Image (cartoon, rainbow, N blue to C red; front, side, top):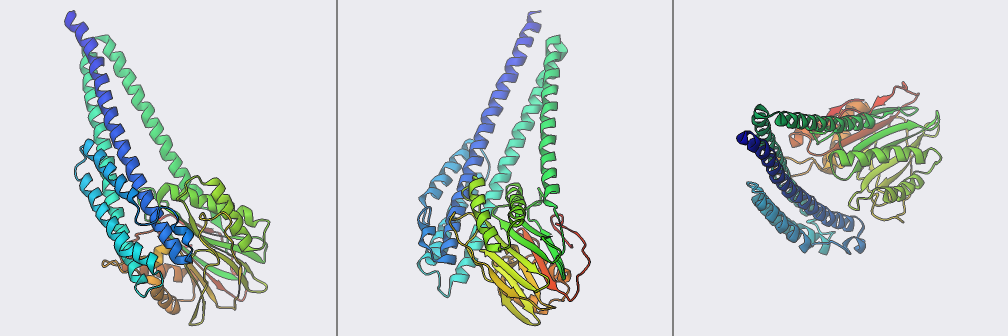
Length: 451
């Protein structure tokens, strides 16, 4: 009897001790994840400042968190300490590599570009910077995967030990049978919560598949691919809708980051811009209002959006657009390619940012092409980007059909880089003599093309 009572008391005590050990391990892993996120945000802040300064020559971009930033090194050392405390194999080595890559990025890329952003070597330096930051991202992904595996291992080990403790104790005394049932109920609740979270991801995917319209007297093509395999959603978006039978809007945008968070910002942009454009005619007015709304709504100071918003009047064949830092935008007139330059800075940097509207007359047969940077920054095995010059060459020789053009560009980027490496969205519009078939398009599942 004493042995049975001792077992009944010892079983719960062992379980509590195991839970406490697992909780401490999870806390260490959570601290490491938080340090990794802070490290990446620091790098992104430096990159954003340098890019903004290169694009605008505005020294305000370099007022805070500019290279060299000792905060990156401090956070990296703190992360290494947490990884060693968690006994995470190879984690400290990956962080040490990130420190070395970050130092190389600051010394070989950021500081030279800050001193002379217009030098002849600027393009090469930016390409080298992209190669280095991609290497840092790979190290960060390696650490993140190791943290995830460690967390799963802790949970699996805990589950095995508790299951064994409960099973043995339940065979000895009835009390442990009750404890086993309680554990099973808790596990069922956890599985229910997991299923609920997964349903939220599925709902977000369905939300982003917004049905748009082809615009009057146009043929349109669309393509979308996401680099985030696990979530199948990304931060790039494209949309088109009619304001009147003769006039319509189309939009392409790229939200910073990747995965669910970027997709959330993209969805916000899509619906907010549609609402703002409902009572407006000027693209610049819509973009400026959205910039203020974005800063008032999104609480992440590192978040930003690059976008191109245009309206097309079928009766006059006039295109009006406002571009918030969007790069790849062209009009093809026969074999002549005209660039559509940005008319303001990216969304989310300055509340009082001003944007201009440019007017572009189009003729029957002219093609407008817009693409996010997943196209121009597709890189080969040597780290060389596809670049705007190759895109222009492809556009000049591409078929007239807008959808065929979009599909060709996706295939070209995929062949050049060996697979989609960054979220990618493309929209093409061709002016035609008579209105085409008013068929809705679906904003496409990730990693698919077609309208």
